[in-house]
Image (cartoon, rainbow, N blue to C red; front, side, top):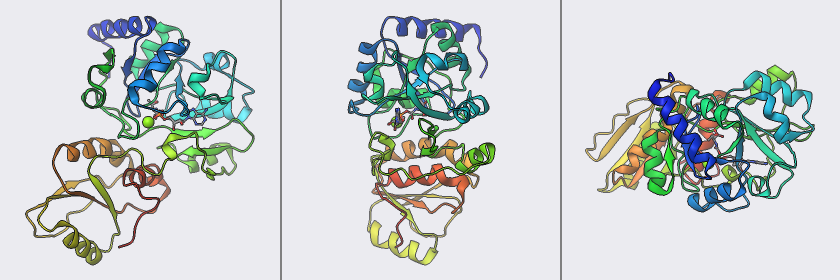
Length: 330
Ligand code: TXA
Ligand code: MG
């Protein structure tokens, strides 16, 4: 996306709304965020109200430049800095010890703050002009699918948001990888398209993915990122697959998200073809679930995805979207 004269005006509008304490939906490379000036606790509080999000779930502060990091975070380890320098701007959120500047409304009263530099030209311009950070969770109602287009933001939040900055479809399509770098024990709190493996190679050490039910990571709730339609994850074995589908459908229409065509001769089954590549799959995932939700399907069946670390973020979102702790065997 290029910043044109038209988008300059939109950027200006977004900055003005943020300065006045309003809420702006901002495009990022992962998903759209619902942003408020991070130095305005009253404005940040509105985000929780609009999203129907419990106050105990902290939000990420988005900044323009690594030089701003020390305004928001303190006790930054060499490894945390190395991650920031390597991946920012990009889909990595670092949890770090917070400075006094960060209000409790952002952190849910914790002594840590989530930070990232998003990689989207319009939002980078907004952040630079604002000269400060914005607090922004994903721009969806709590527990629902994150929006990856401006239209999806409208669908989620309608006129509750003061301004929507349309930056096109998000390039990545699922939320950032969250790494807790507030202690020496680096941990992945939420998988994203930057894999644990990639980080481990970069730092030449192993990470722990043991979340120990970290209650403050809302994406950790068993049912999250969820479509309205009931969703079932399928085992790849076709015979079981067919048996389950036949049992389930009776006469109602069902959707199947599959990476290959499966020959089930039933008129009430609609296939949604998904890419075989994890990056392309991630890009399409939330858009496809939204499209399916617009129809009155009885159930969405999702074909199991490869058991490979490159699919970790997608597996995590699919499990949560189906409200299942793990992939079911049927
Ligand atoms: O890609 C993304 O991360 C998107 C875009 C908009 O940047 N944002 C996003 O925000 O997904 P949200 O609020 O939907 O998810 C942020 C997650 C939440 O699960 C929250 O609990 C966790 O980050 N989080 C934020 N601050 C934290 C902290 N201090 N400690 C632990 N978890 C934190
Ligand atoms: Mg979210």
